[in-house]
Image (cartoon, rainbow, N blue to C red; front, side, top):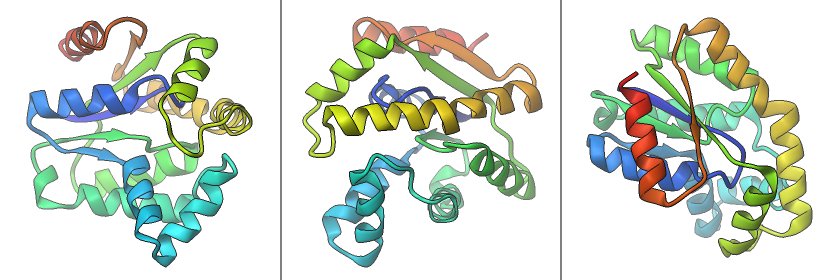
Length: 185
């Protein structure tokens, strides 16, 4: 099963995607985790990524798409994958669709996690990342509203009935069970 986890920054995509990946025994591909590892490495890619993330900006499409598509082409993804943090805008969604079509694959489900913005801000402030401060969080949410939220419309319009909206509030296990139920609809 090929799944995209979608929702605002801080809604719980990473936590839920990792749990579901383990449950389904398929890879969890998080562009955020890939970017954070690159930053920690201190290599050139990491420095490029750091410039964008420190300012609450999205990493450029070409770089993000290259990293994500490369990960999907790994042998471990042959039986499915969970994407978390990608695609983040229409250009990336279109590039992903093109790459998947070329490989004879599709997206089976888009899990759209939702939560009130006030809850999301509190979660992000308490997760302890260096780049999570009120100004950067607000900028991330603005970028999400402007650039990322239209991706949901793309999947609703082009992929049939693949978008499943799931309430992201509650205990982690409770949210996970809602996600599993959404996958079987």
